[in-house]
Length: 389
Image (tube, rainbow, N blue to C red):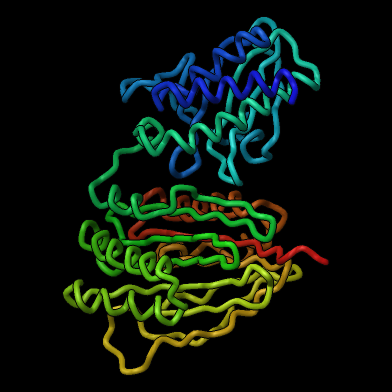
């Protein structure tokens, strides 16, 4: 183990011993001591991914009151965040300004910005390692502090939106050796009950997207029943048919005639196959060999609508190299109908799923002039398949 690795281990130990909200300051102090860095701050990506909020030097790391917000588009920050690489620029007056991605398992948390007197390849590598360590700390710390939650909110959040965001996975994107995925949700002016979810097991990847009827708190509470019924069945080891049945039964028993559309997908990590349940939801889109097409599976009635037939578990044709896109009707209805989602998926074929969902939600919001009448939710999955023997 090198001397620098030992020092980084000491920093991690110090951060774990400090308050959860102090990790940025501890990493900044370490970079100042080691490299003479100045103006060290963390730029947190907001919940939609269009702005950055500064925490640390020059920003506001305590609750509320004047945190600096920085538009992302067309800046070196966008270059670093989208490209996931260190961007170098001349510092103000002297030195070298670095913008460094802070990411964990494919989740782009934000950026580390600092100014150094100079930086060779070895220093750049060590700064990158410090940024990676900061990512681990933030992922751990956000379980214990609201700092990263309130800082990432660049607009006010209603009670319904608070409930809805609490139902989403803690990480909006995830990378594995066999897949990469990302989800995004742009809430309507009146919350529409959309959710997405995923979970990775040793042998199974679970993915889902749902759209609860109604608006505001009513739909958010319906979504709460739905998501927790789904997770409870999944964590109990139920197969896909039983997961769908438990979601359906929960809505019948507790929602006073509410219903929800949705898709539940189960993918074998060894590449032996994928399964899908479609409960009244828009068909997925699949990009394969440069062509985007709808995956026209059979459609069952929505969850919560009384029916005599059980939910149909169907095989899903998913091959290594495919990109699968799930979305709710808010991505294509009303003003969003002018967005050519298939063309957008083709045009972003070379991008990471993070960029696909960001580009798609931005297009929908622009088409709706910033005011959505229904939630717009999208989840993009790249299936790489198991390693070739």
